[in-house]
Length: 156
Image (cartoon, rainbow, N blue to C red; front, side, top):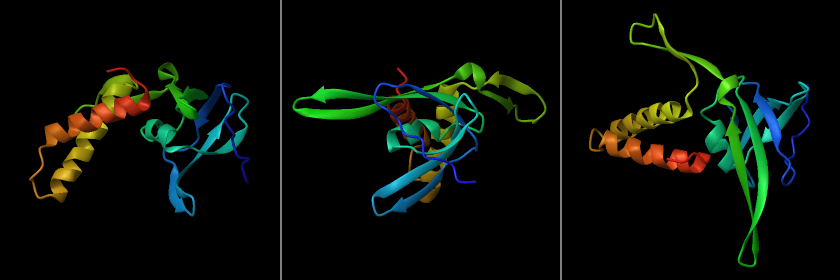
């Protein structure tokens, strides 16, 4: 089944639900792309080519996550600049996190700050491994966390 392409209209919020855990990422003649399979409130399925700004928020979300995306334009000098507001609906996103034993759930609501911090530390460990222990995990993780929260629109 081929899904129609989801288009974002200026100042028209679109609520979507992710149909898979991850986007299909690739490179075309126009640069990198991030393809998500999503559905709307009527359960109609769409292909959504997310701009990098939106992908930076959605990439940490899982299947079933619900987000409202609004394309906005603002005047910067003589230029019209497009940006996106992405709001993850926390109440509708459930996730179980287990303690070290893997037996008991610690919480069952997705906390976007926690998810971003965990991802930042995991990525920092990869950087440290790549450079044979010469990188400071804490500094890298905190820097990544700050950048992710800024890119996602969260206020730190």
